[in-house]
Structure formats: structure tokens, C-alpha cells
Length: 263
Image 1 (cartoon, rainbow, N blue to C red):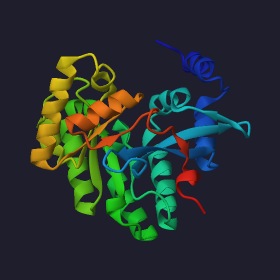
Image 2 (cartoon, rainbow, N blue to C red):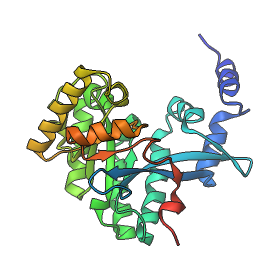
Image 3 (cartoon, rainbow, N blue to C red):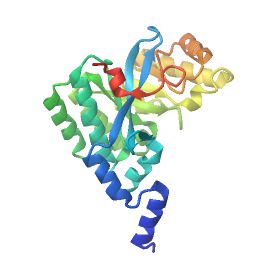
């Protein structure tokens, strides 16, 4: 059996923090996080930002920003992901409340938030308090959760739709190309995983799979987003195949969210 002190020491070594759980609590309580947004462009309107995916960074030592990979595992380990998701939601709604920025924001949801009964009531309360149009919020549900936590995901998606929010299935085709999760979640968007997008130019199989996804999207009204787009040639091929939206470093890099909501 691992002693509690030994586990704490291991966590400290991994994070670089002497007391990781206390550091995470401090970050939540004192707003040490900063929101970024990565634009998603509509191929039919080059340069136009249709949606921005909300990303979070942890502020360390004034100017240093830690990427998610440096602190999200610790949040997951301590069972605090739903609290972080609440922080992100609350602050994203504040940005939308101010207006004058991108039309929609998409927020990633953790498995811990999916399974927390109080999360949707919290969302409903925040929407009432801010007066933000629910349709300006899109929630990204990961394919892994849609497959492994099917009932929780379907229940959550149904609750989101009742509130008027959008649903996006993220990481699609990472594990399978089954369209069942799209139907079950009543998704508005599907984001095709980078494992299918990166080899697109050289792989006929990848192109055939993407064509099938686009066809299903056209029939069902689900909008298709390609992620991890890094080259103009890939962007051109996606347009040729009928993909509507693109995201990636070849499209736009993540920016501090203030830059997407200019004063």
C-alpha cells in the first residue's frame, strides 16, 4: 500500500509544486487562470471566425503561462476537473455577456463534469444570471466519453439541448467511424480527429472516410469541422471534399480571449 505522504511527494515531483492539491485550490479561488481561444474558420468565408474553442492556461510568476498538459493531469488526479470546468464556463459567459466578439464559443467538458449531477443546473443558473443566448455556447464532448460513458454523455447532451446550447462531438474517427454517437447525442457539429486529417493528402483511405463523414453530415445537418489543419494544401483538399469548417495552427493560433473580444 502506498503511503499518503509518498503519493504527495510523487505528485509534487511531477508538478513541481510542494503541495499540488493546495496549489490547484489556490488557482481556482484566486483566478490564476487565463482564457485563450483558438478560432475555427468557415471555409466559405476565408478569414471569418465562426466559433472559437476556449482553452485555459495557468498563470505562474506573472508572465509565465503553463499549458494544459502541465496541470490538467493534476486536476484529474485530485478529482477537481468539474471545478475547473465551472471556472472556465463562468468566465467564458462573462466574455459573451460583454458582446462585440466572436459569435460562438465552444467549451471542452471533462468526464468528471459529465458525471456531476449539479453541472447542468449550474450552467442554467449562469445563463439566467448573464442573460447570454444559450445558442452562443457549444459544448465539446469527446468521442472517448461518448463510447465509454454512453449513458452519461447522452443524458448530458439531452440536457444541453433542452437549455438551447449546441453539442459538438470531438475527436471523431479517432477510435471508430461509427455514426451512432452522432445520432445519440443529436450533435450539431462533429470535429474530425487529426489522425484522419494529417495524412489526408497522401491517403486515399483517409479521403474516402472523410467523404463518408461529409455525406452523413449533409444528410443529417451536422456541420463538419476538420482539426489539426496546418497546410494550405490540406485546407484546399478539405474544401474540395465539402468540409465546412477548419481549425489548426495553419488556420489560426490560440490567442488571449481578450483579443477575440476587443474593447
